[in-house]
Image (tube, rainbow, N blue to C red):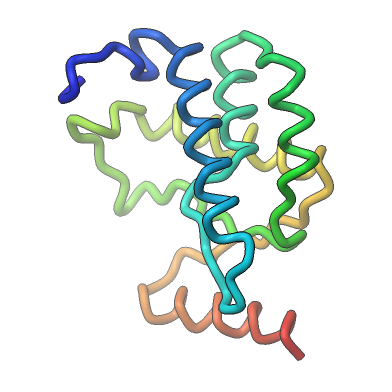
Length: 140
């Protein structure tokens, strides 16, 4: 809305999803040749999750792109954490809605052949150590 548009999830969900997919593919392509470990906060499949939750089907090209642009099979996901969850002007979902999105997102990633590694609810340092340990296992 800051740019004057309405492609936000609560106004034009299909346009929002199209832009979300476009940006996720751009991010993927931009980092595809990276030799260092790269983390994405959101990914291509999150767009398919959004479409499933809001009840529309993305164009077939979106599903083909999800197969073409593959991430590492091991995907880290942080579950909604009631003790630290908060809403604001950008995060409008309630905790309950966020938990539903999380479950559906895990389903979508699994359907596409990814292995979910749930990040434990712990201190920031413990979460970082957990992720570093799991990434190290991949590099061994």
